[in-house]
Image (cartoon, rainbow, N blue to C red; front, side, top):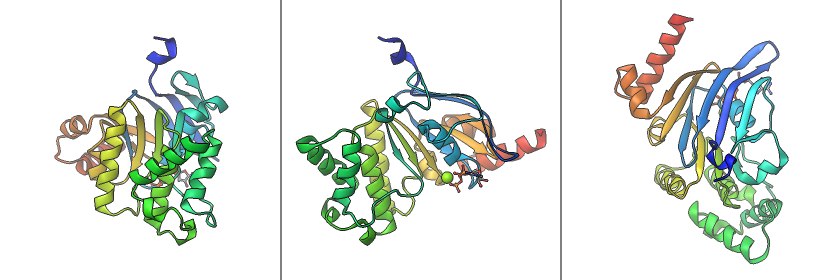
Length: 248
Ligand SMILES: Nc1ncnc2c1ncn2[C@@H]1O[C@H](COP(=O)(O)OP(=O)(O)OP(=O)(O)O)[C@@H](O)[C@H]1O
Ligand SMILES: [Mg+2]
């Protein structure tokens, strides 16, 4: 085993991020293990997307370190290792679903039969096979999310970084997508996913709860609920958040 093979998929230590004089992320330290389905849960504006952007190397921290598979970020060569689904879809509206996928696939070095075959399987996974020849601007919001997810999966990355992947997706397909995410982790893929949806959070192996840029809990959903002395993640969130405020 090489040295980097022992390292966690994501290692964040002492992450600080400020915008102006506002501390958006305040001393975030956590690891995401390989093969883990890891959820990032927090209210709107708590800093989830900011943290996700630091993981991908799109943004740089003002303090602390981000490592992917033992490699410091940002680093160009690490782009191949993960698939990223941003909170807002980055699609070419005039291009069809298939053309969007082909474009992004080519950025990852896919071509020919391998590209065609990956497009088919990623599209099938998100139930878009019958819509691949429509332009993206004719897609519904949920279909655009699904296309973005298919693009993130195209090059079969070891790590998936998903920022609210299921917003606008109906409950049946949402369930199917979560089943698929779980199947991917069973093949060794690591997934970090942000969500507002509590039943999704409960499907994660471990959760990081963030509030106002601070980590208020980091554990399995069951342990978080137990330690908070409540019955649901939603209640745990409220209980833990108010305890932190009392301490502050
Ligand atoms: N580039 C920026 N410049 C200034 N402030 C920013 C910038 N990006 C984010 N912020 C601020 O940082 C805070 C955290 O934003 P972020 O997008 O990380 O929240 P979030 O948890 O992803 O919220 P949501 O659930 O609504 O997506 C917000 O107050 C936001 O206004
Ligand atoms: Mg966000």
